[in-house]
Structures are given as structure tokens and as C-alpha cells.
Image 1 (cartoon, helix red, strand yellow):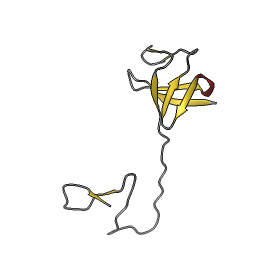
Image 2 (cartoon, one colour):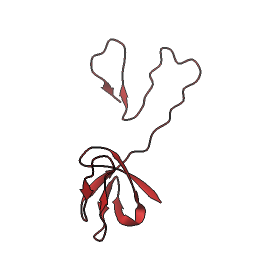
Image 3 (cartoon, helix red, strand yellow):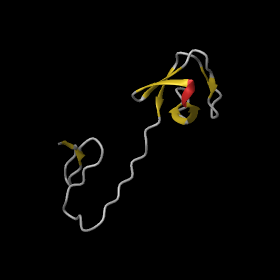
Image 4 (cartoon, one colour):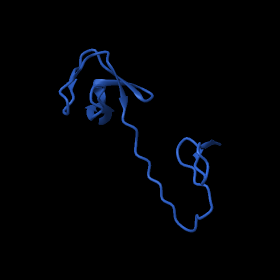
Length: 89
């Protein structure tokens, strides 16, 4: 199974075999007997190096009448008309 990662050098998307890395939350560590190269910038990722897992895309569908309502997406910030700073819920 391929795991999507973010290159530390260029921020490009890498896809590596799950058996080449050790996963810990959103951080991935290259195993001691593996090395792989970013296809975008040719940076070699060496054993013991940590990379971030590419976050999954969130799909949001809104239907119906939502005028005058607050829509909360992500970390809970609400953007209201006329306010300069987001309000934390």
C-alpha cells in the first residue's frame, strides 16, 4: 500500500510503500534499510529521517438555505460579517 508523504525539501507529494516507513500519527520515519528520492527535487530521504504524512482532503457538501447562518469548517473558527478576527468556538 502506498502512503502519501510531503517532501521536506520542496513540499512535493511523495508516495512510498508502507513497508519502507514506520508511522507515528502524522509523522513518518524512514526505516533503517530504506532510501527513496523525491521525484520533484531529487532530494534523497535517508534512514531515520522524519517526514509528514499528506493530510487527507476533506469533502464538504452544503445544500439548502444557509443564508444568515454560521458555517463551521475545520478548527472551529467562525467568520462573521464585519468582524476582523475569527472567533474561536
